[in-house]
Amino acid sequence: MHIREATEKDFDAIWPIFKEVVSAGETYAYPQETTKDEALKLWMQLPQKTFVIEEDNQILGTYYIKTNQSGPGSHVCNCGYMVSSKARGKGLATDMCEHSQQVAVGLGYKAMQFNFVAASNAGAIRLWNKLGFETVGCLPKAFNHPDLGYIDALVMYKWLQT
Amino acid sequence: MHIREATEKDFDAIWPIFKEVVSAGETYAYPQETTKDEALKLWMQLPQKTFVIEEDNQILGTYYIKTNQSGPGSHVCNCGYMVSSKARGKGLATDMCEHSQQVAVGLGYKAMQFNFVAASNAGAIRLWNKLGFETVGCLPKAFNHPDLGYIDALVMYKWLQT
Image (tube, rainbow over all chains, first blue to last red; front, side, top):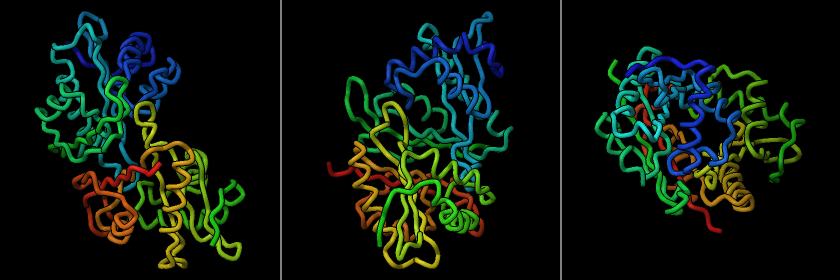
């Protein structure tokens, strides 16, 4: 398993993962019908950096890191992680989240925030808790889930060791 | 006192208010040195709509409304309000916040969220509470205040009557 910074050439391999995750509408605050061009902008151009995780030269997951709020909030970063359905349960999200915390510290960030974790996403919440993130907010009915309707979204946060 | 939608021609009158508020660095997640061009983009071009509040044809305050999260979060809006220092204490923020809630409902939003309220901003917190917003999150040390250092930021939220 190898994590490296992505280039735009990697986007053809990232796009099927993005599309699979986002079209389900269950986890990310992107429209389910987000196009490939929009995804490229959201995942690779707007963030500060984007990474991929590979096995045998195959991209199985990806994450971005960006500043969460500018000005007085610019010491806090935000990350998003996606894993291909064919590679779930292998610890890739853990690997990427740990990697991203090191990258964050290297970039000078002091904390990491997840703004919008669907309360139904128990696997992610359990994982972020295990990796030291606390639930610091609960947004009532802020997430419109395709099956469950309006459910809560959590805000999760970790002050990073520096 | 009159609230109306702003046009870009109003920005010359909005800019001194924006600059005064943002250069203080105490309330908004914009860099203190934000330029006029950047402010135009942030306050008038990226949001869905921008309004001004006037008295005797003089612009004394302004607010924007925009979608807070896209896709599954797109039923929740975000607003930001600014009042000129020479017009504080006259209830303009209250007027604008109440107006914005009506606008939000008209645009189809179901809730309103403030993402990043400095915990030191007691006047704003008291006002949002009075207007029905609840503190639903507290981001530890997420706001780098010019005098107070790293202080908490609050997330405030209101489900709108529709």
